[in-house]
Image (cartoon, rainbow, N blue to C red; front, top):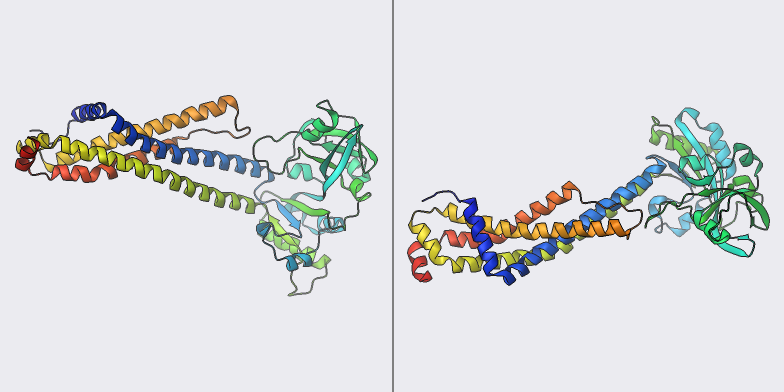
Length: 420
């Protein structure tokens, strides 16, 4: 009598049992397939989303600083009384910082003034857009890309020239899908020449989208709209030099602005120096929550699948009681029988897991070919395939252990009599 399981024999038994109990086997494998499909689909989707968001955020650099009246870490949760004590940043403060900051620690600086809703016209067409009044190197820091045209020159910025860069959607609405380059639009009743069109960022999630916005030189906008109005948003954007200690730079910015605003020692800051890295922390926190949700949702299906496989194995033990009694009487060890039934359970679970992975691959293929989720590249990673296979094996071991244990501990004489 052999003391080790014969893999070919076990495979033969598995396929024979699957064939003889096709409906029962199919329903059991379906639970594992749905569980693996749910878990790995969510993990794959979340991985793709994380990759997309991190790539989008990387455009700003890891340490870009935003000097603002708002604490970006507490957006929507700020104390209103405290927020009223915060003062908007001003163009004069930008110039003061530019003059006082150590130039070796700063790669680029810029100042933005944003109007949330302004009507822009071309002929009979009009639309409401955000207006960005910019100076310094805002396009360079935030890595805005143009589909056509150019950015404004230093001379145009310094003189507040009537030139604009418009978003792709703005071009479509105003010029009815025709080229808007070098045409004149009306903004605040003034003629403004279009010198560039922003590239459409695309995708289902957009970081800092400019498709529905217009950029003009800051001085042009300031000559029309005063900075000190409730509906005007301003901030100073600073990109540190590559080797600069960001914490030290933040301290230097804070010291200079406190000096400018004449804040006394111990007096609370009336501004915030925000680091863009907080967005990455928010993304990572959300990603962890989505991972957990995936495991919880998939876990229920895997539990159903595990019960289904356990049921198959119990039935298999019952149907093969006499056979088990005979092989035990001939000298088969408990370990041999235990291994055989657990291996059979694992194979059943693996079939279900492989089916779930196959469904995911088919879904990714359809999404890729039809472009259902624009801008989001979805792919099934080796890591997630391995997770799917490992989880399938674990489900098989857990589901098959108790039936296998019972089979291994059957009394040979009683098993032979019971099977007659």
